[in-house]
Length: 303
Image (cartoon, rainbow, N blue to C red):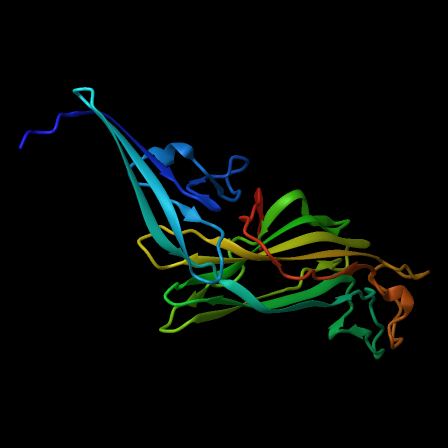
């Protein structure tokens, strides 16, 4: 059998279809920014290709990927070798979503003379703040054997603080907290279909702490519900399944009392709360939406 001539050139071209990325880069904007996922066409021209699909359907679907290898031999001969691969795609789904922002609390800061009753709202005493309490919960469902991890990532932008200092002051998305995931990840792995309950409870507070004279909270929260498969050789990445957004807009100002100081207010014992103690502004939670874009942030707001 004659020997094959030496190969002088070889070109490989992968041709994936669908919504995919194949390159993870550090944030181009800031060292602590979110990673940037993109399509790198040069990597699709290598013999071994790593491709992450970020979209699909809950019903397992067979997809195809084509690859072609063009070979030129030292004697001038040329051959083109096409091939097609098949794999099954499954995207977990979200169900049973519920969520709300229970209330926003505003209390007048004051100091009570001895023996006087204390003014209390929602179990708290003697405070002046904007204090929404938000929560949501959703089930992440996957079909065996597509095991994985589920969790949520929260970003925020806007302003929150008082005239004695701003805790949040950003016009671009920031990761809320030191960790990428708000809570520990839920493991989805069993002998049957998998369901993980992912939830989030958040109660940002703009408190005057007896020093400031006004407080403000104008924030836009974005909660990304995410899944990372644990099957296959990997490495695998987290993809987004859904998005929950909840804006908060509230302001409060210290109500001065003639003849007193900020820490020596006369008691406010009226029940129910007087109208002038109700916070101005509003907060609401949007419905869960199907979403497949990666979370994006430029910097981190510490805990």
